[in-house]
Image (cartoon, rainbow, N blue to C red):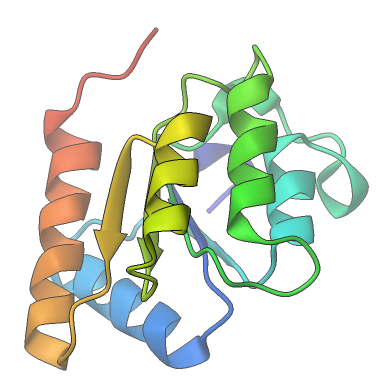
Length: 146
């Protein structure tokens, strides 16, 4: 896979949760063009084609970003803010996938322009089903801004 063929950018520091997401997307043939990053700083470098990702064409951005909130270096709200404040990236759909049910996180995410806020379901089957449904919607059904 070339770095320019990304459809899904998964930003998740929990290895177990990331593994579940990736396996669920693979099972449904939705993970062919997925990049997994483990912190918000990596995500910002990837999205804005800087640092280790300098030279990547920003116009080949992901169709959707699955973003955790509680991450090292740069948290998910800071990543979301940077994406939605930049005219080059503001139209990329961002789905927060987190275990946080805190009202302040939900409210702040929507104020910053998140497209969807999903609380990670408890249990493997429910989590896998939720990820598959998200993947189908954002990759196959949603019509992105051109």
